[in-house]
Length: 79
View 1 (cartoon, helix red, strand yellow):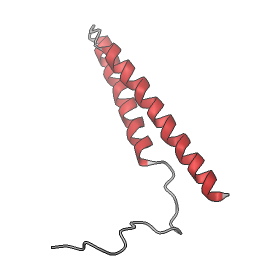
View 2 (view 1 turned 90 degrees about the horizontal axis):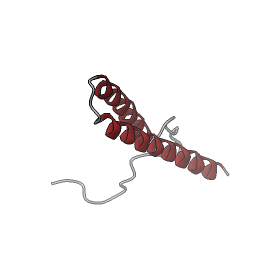
View 3 (view 1 turned 90 degrees about the vertical axis):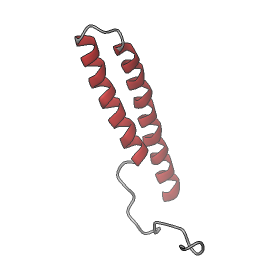
View 4 (view 1 turned 180 degrees about the vertical axis):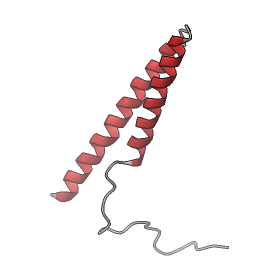
């Protein structure tokens, strides 16, 4: 059916690290979309925009966390 054994490592140690972690990029995308949704919601006169603002705050904190975590891991690997 398929390969069930062997080395399952999908990257090599000499590979360049990505400039931004993927989860941080996703969180920034969600943050930007939530801000746009909040603006559209408030322009239409709906108070539902408050939920979008809260989601934008949460996702921006997630992006900050993942970026900071990647930086700390990169610094730990360098030393």
